[in-house]
Length: 169
Image (cartoon, rainbow, N blue to C red; front, side):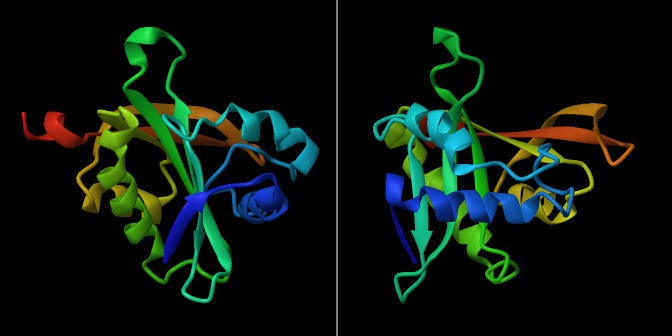
């Protein structure tokens, strides 16, 4: 598995992977597919030094997923905190790639000046909750019924973990 900075050429595949998660109502609060054009500002907000957008390739060089770092709150005191999002091609899910990607993110975060990682995960997404918990994340918040998907209330859990030097305190 290889990680590299995403390029504009990768954006259609990134968007296709993202859109493949929408019908399942487990991963994103978007309810209809998004366009490549709509994702351009999001793509350009990423910064290789502190908030990268990485694509993940398998051993054959096929793009199988991506991981994004985003600012948590947009104020300077939160600069060391990042929300992470991991998305996998629907044919690559359930193959332990998520665990490898999350472990890589944890390892590389201190070099990005990140000391705290956050995952925003729907409460019904037990697979992702189990993955993050397995790698040392703890539930830091529960926002009950905050989203409405297909007329049903969904809760959002925020999982957090200190990384690097801070994680041992």
